[in-house]
Length: 250
Image 1 (cartoon, rainbow, N blue to C red):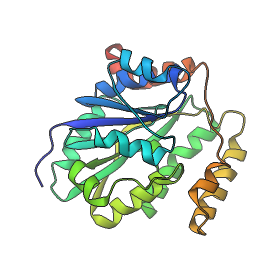
Image 2 (image 1 turned 45 degrees about the vertical axis):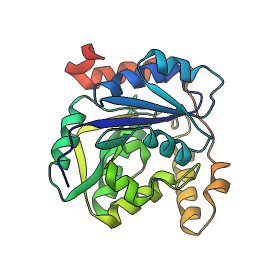
Image 3 (image 1 turned 180 degrees about the vertical axis):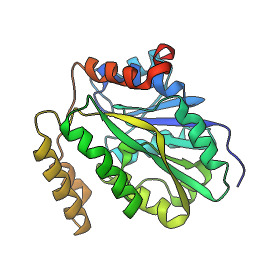
């Protein structure tokens, strides 16, 4: 496989107007193009993304379908799939290209670090790190990247509203060697945990177990509420603080 030189960033969205402009600005430091796959958000998410410099494609509302819609519009050698509430520092670009300079490596992900920090988010960093090292299991909030030709050969993401990231990562792991990048980490909003830490952890465990037992992702999605932060300034500020020297570039 050839050494990649270009990256396309794909971001699926649903009602992410307060976050998407900032998300696109960060992503434009990583990729030659940023594609937002919006599911008809009623809050001007698509307009905000366009204003920030992204290409917007329309899609049905299901994250797997949206990710595939964005990937179809991409031209880069590498596809990087990011959530709207995730921020990858600019050093992540070179980390991806360095990892894929090894022709045996087909894709990978980053270590997620949740912000703003709390006792719970600090607990998640080593637990996620250990899970990745021991089981090679990871999810979409960790910034999954893959060579475009590998993505196509795998048939893309399953058209699930939930667990599409886990299912896709398992396909990548079965196909070949992957890279796990811990420096830089990817910063992810802790909005889903705020005030509901243990409840969210138990929900994750229940959803994962149910999926393993064969429960349909369409059914599981009904138990996984859409959590949005109408005022994400604390998350945005925390990302800039932790990113350090790149803050002035965003």
